[in-house]
Image: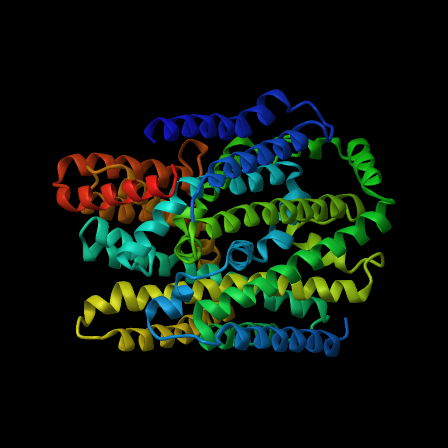
Length: 60
Length: 492
C-alpha cells in the first residue's frame, strides 16, 4: 500500500506543479485557445481520470 | 426587472425546495448522527450534488466570472487547480469515512480531538471554523441582497433579500437536518447547472453566433486575456496566493470534509467524488465563458463583479432566462450557507457544549445544535446587514485561515509522532498570521497570507511534535485500525 501511495503522490505533485509552471513559463506567449486554456483543461481531465482510477478499486 | 416576477420565482423555488425537504425527512430517526449526517446513509448521487452545491457558492457566476473579466484565462487555471484538489479525497476520503463510522465521529474537529487525545484541540478547531465561516456566510447573504436589489432596480430592498435567504436556510435546515439540506442541495445543484448552461448558450449563440465566434473574437481583440500573467491581475504571486489555500479546501473546510462521513458506502463515496468532479468541470467552464463573454460584449467595466449583472441586463438574454439565472445564483449561495450553518451547529453541540456540560445527553446536545441553526443564521444576517469592512477581510481570510488545520489532519492519518500541542499551536499561530496579514495587508516577499499561514503551521506542527510527547497508544490504535480497514476496502 505504501508504495502505491508514494507512486500516486509523486504523480499528483508533478501534475499539480505543471499546472503552475507550464502556463507561466512555457505558454505565456501563446495567446491562443490552444495555449494555457487548453493546457489547464487537459490537466484537470487528467486529474479527474487519475482519481477515477484510484476510486474504481474501492470496495463497498 | 419587475419585482413581482422576482418574488414569484423565489416563492416557487422555496415551495419546491420545501416539498423536497418534507420528502427527505420521511422516516427520519433520532440522534446526532441522524440529524447532522443523515445517519451516514446518503446515496452517492445525492452526496455528489450536495457536495457540489455546498462547494460552489455565488462566487462562481459572480466572482470567478469577474476574475476572468479582469484577469483572463488565469481564472480558469486557478479554479481547475482547486478542482484538482479533490485528489486529496482519493487519499483522505476513505480514511475519514472509515474512522467516522468506527468511532462515530460527527464532526472533523471531533476526529482531531479523539486522535490527538485533546478536548482543547477539538474546541479550538471548532471555534476557528466558526470565526472564519460566519463571515463567509455573511458575504453570501450580501451577494443575494445585492443581486435582488440590483436586478429589481432597487424595488426589492437589500434587507429583504437577506431575510428571504435566512428564512429559506433556517426552514430547510431545521426541518430535516442533513437529510433536508442534502436533498434541497441536490435540487439547487440541478437549478444551478441548468440555469447557467441555458444562459451561457444564449449569450454565446446570440452574442457571437457560436463558440467559434467567441474564440475568434477573443484571439483577435483580446489576445492577452488568453495568457498568464496576461493583463496583469494573475501575476505568479496572486495566482499561488489564490490557488494554494483552495487546493486544500476539501480537507480544510469542515462543511465539505464533514460530507466525507455521509455516503452509504465507499462505492457511494466514489459516485460522490466523480459526480462532483464532472459537475465542477462543467460549472467552472460555464463561469469562465461568462467572464470572457462579458469582456468582449461589455469591455468598459471597472469592477469585475459587475460583469454578471451587466451581462444579464443585455438584450441578448431574455428576461425569463435572467430570472432563472438569478434563482440559480441565489440557490448557489443558499446551498452553501445552509450547509455551513448546519456544520457549525453540529460543532457547537458536539465539540464545545459536550465539554462545557458533560451531563448533556444526546437529546440535549441535539436541541442545542438545532438551536444554533437559528443563532448562526441570525448572526450571518446581522453581519451581512452591517456590511462591515471586517466581514470582507474575514471572509477573504477564511481559506487561508482554515488551511492551518491541514497539517494536523494529514498528521492524524500519516504521522504517529504528531501531538496535540503541535496541532493546537499550529492552528492558533497559523490562524493568527492569516488574520493579521490579511487585515494589515502584509505580504512579505510578495506572498499572500495563505502561503505564509501554510508554511508557518506546517513547520510549527512538525517542530513542536518533536518537542512534545505523542499519544503513542492512541496513534497506534487509530492509524493501525484505519490502515487495516483500508486494505479490506482496497483503498490506498
